[in-house]
Length: 314
Image 1 (cartoon, rainbow, N blue to C red):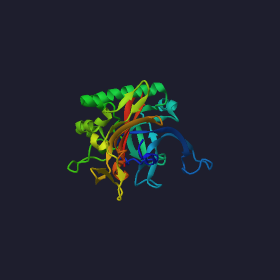
Image 2: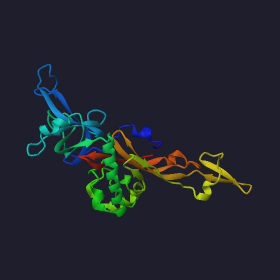
Image 3: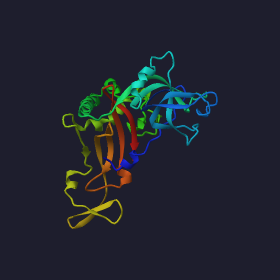
Image 4: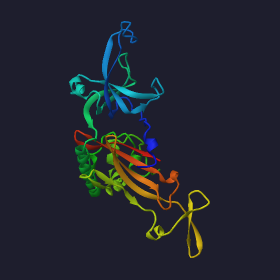
C-alpha cells in the first residue's frame, strides 16, 4: 500500500498513562496464574496459586518505572465491587480481542502483578473484519462517515471515534507551532476543541470511492503534474532526485515530485485507511520526501464502525 509496510510490522509503544486516568485499551483478554501469599515466589513451595484476568495490550506501554526494559505488555484487571462488570461478563471473551474502558492505577501490593492495572468500567468485543458480511457492513458505515465529513457534521463524526484514541491530534491536522497541541492521546476534549480542523484534515478520505457490494476501495490520487507536464518524456538527470526533458532543442532540468494519495484496504481484520503522499510515477520524488501517510484503523465494535487508532509514518 505504501513503502512503509516494514515500519507497520513493528509493535508501536503507547504512552504511559497517569494514575487514575480514564482510558480505553485494546488487546486480547487472557488469564494468568502466579504465586501469591505468603511469599509470592513459588506455588510448588507452598505459595497460594492466584489467577486473575489480564489484557495483553495491542500497544504495550512504555513506562519508566517498569521493571523490564520500561515496557508494560499487559495490564491486570481489577473488578471493583460497585461496578457492573463481573467475571461472568469476561469469561466468554477469554482469548478474544476486546476493548476495555476504566481508570488506571499503579501496583501497590503483592497481589498486583503488573506495574499498571485497570479498574474496569466497560468491556466490548472487538469484531474482526473477516467475513464478507462484516466487510460490507464496515464499508456501508464508512460511507456514512464520509457523509458526515461532507456535511461537516461534528456530532455525527464524533460517534465514530473511540476516546481516548491511541494516536495524536497531529495525525489529523497539519502541524502549527503557534498552537499548543497535545501529542497523545487524542482525547474527547481535544476533539471538541479542534473538531472543524479534524474534519478538514480528513477530507481526502471523503474522496475515496468505496463499493460495499464488491468490497473494494479505489485509490484516490491527485497527480502533481499538469496535463501538459504529463505529456512530456522525462529522463534521469545527473543528480539524485532530478530529471530532464527536451523541448524545442533545449534540455530542461526539473525536480521529482510527490502525488497526494488516499487509499484503503482490509488488513488483518481491520479496515485501514490512509492519506498522504507518494512518489509520482513519471517524475518520482525522493522517498524521504514523498513516502509518508497518516493511518486510520477502523474496527467493528458491537457491530458499529469505530476509529480505534491512528498513527503517522514517513
